[in-house]
Length: 157
Image (cartoon, rainbow, N blue to C red):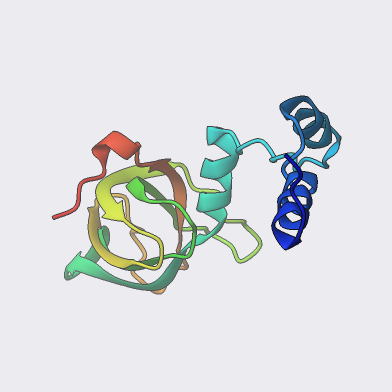
């Protein structure tokens, strides 16, 4: 049987443009450039980066009793500019005696929170280690630590 005409030509053209055999496709895939994904940062790196990007944006302090500032309160506003959800923040403060002293406070207070990226939060902290000289004394307060929320602990309302 002899087949002629455009129909045969079309069939031959389709056969010529058919996909390559599997072995040929596999070889082409192996030669293709691959993207190497950077490893995810470890938890300590994430924690350190989050700590650098969570900021105290405002602090108001006052003596709780007249005549002494041994008992003092801090109203602290915190902004989360990190990419992490934080479920615990630790604060430390000092009342340096001279302007030359740095601010390297030890942790004195820890709060449980659910601070998402972009969130702000306020904290009221009361302490009994204020200066005897009154609030004219200098003070410094810092975030001394945090804990990144585990995915299982994050629940939407």
